[in-house]
Image (cartoon, rainbow, N blue to C red):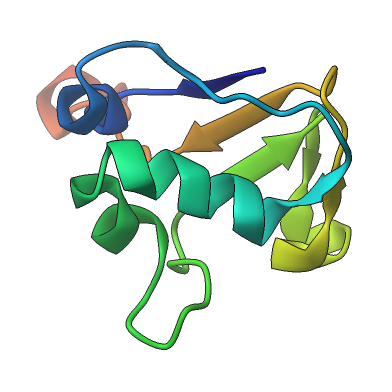
Length: 99
């Protein structure tokens, strides 16, 4: 399975994807532990000190936010799509906005 990471998380990982050997259904928490074993700096970006997801981090399994599923206990299948997205901001600059 490949876990896709986006934006600033790519800088931490050094690539767009993280290959994880997953041959059976696994909880998301276990999948993340396997990812953190290879990329330990990613842990603090994804998880808070209490082990919960950082508030601004979004993890999608098959396009659905895990907070709307079973959170870190969401079951992940070997052929599922897993994406980790950091906070994203932006918009028009004040000087370019019409009034």
